[in-house]
Length: 251
Image 1 (cartoon, one colour):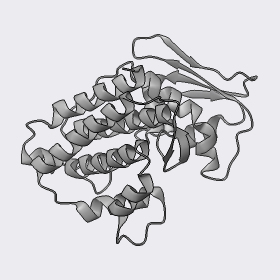
Image 2 (tube, rainbow, N blue to C red):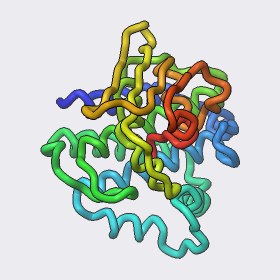
Image 3 (cartoon, rainbow, N blue to C red):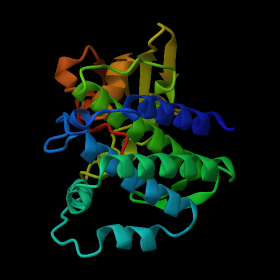
Image 4 (tube, helix red, strand yellow):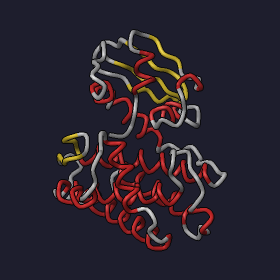
């Protein structure tokens, strides 16, 4: 199994360990996702995993149409996923857990069975199946953290975050383009892993802007779970402030 697919499976397993046997009160616990409880977060993951499965199978448009059928008023991707959750909210806990679990396993099986350089369709456009797998890793990590936080816990920081941090670095042009901006020049990330190792993501061209600091904090900032001003991250170069404001790991 490829390392990114293995990391996705491990992240899913970590979330499953939190959800299996969870009492009803836990499913109803409010999360740091405004207006969403634990059940809503898991529903969102189930829906987006189903979209990823459809992407790998070449059926994204069809499945997305089914998930969004009858919805009106979506003005952005974030608004659209909120409406999807709102429409299906209230699925029984056991049924929802089964839906997410089976979808997560199916996604890993599909990704493990294809050439990860294959181009597939996604919300952000065409990307490689490897990048799709990494975005699913990042989103599963984000929302596993939301669930753990809602239940009074915290996810341990693991080396899987190297993949999340690299995704945030590689997709900076997309993050800037999504708000109509262009990077002044290449950006380097010089991050420190949870174990104190250097995780450097460096462009081939001369660096114009450098972001330095904790990999865990960088991933949290990219997940919109930490404000850059509350982190210890530092930046040098013309785009430093904008990178920290715009960096993200999801469409």
